Length: 89
Image (cartoon, rainbow, N blue to C red; front, side, top):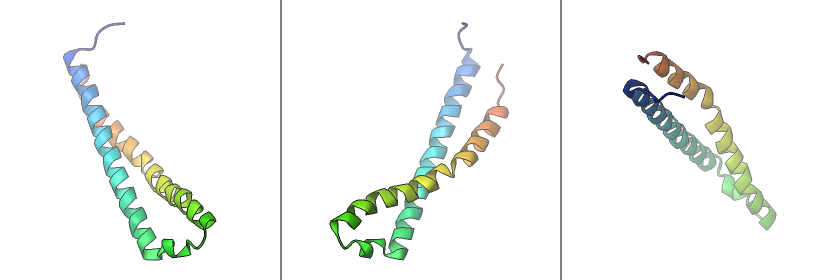
């Protein structure tokens, strides 16, 4: 297996950075959307017992998870198009 050229190593590093930036943006936006939805719906008022308090956390986590995972196709398209625009040799 050969070593990466300087251009290829720089391209791979740029792809990792671009992916990290896209994931960080998706994380921040999904957290913001969940916080706004929880605040708008006053979801904490439904906590009346220990059982409802214990279920509040997984329910909120699942809401965030669905929002975060729906950003995956957009992140993949952005990173793939970025990779396609680079000179690899």
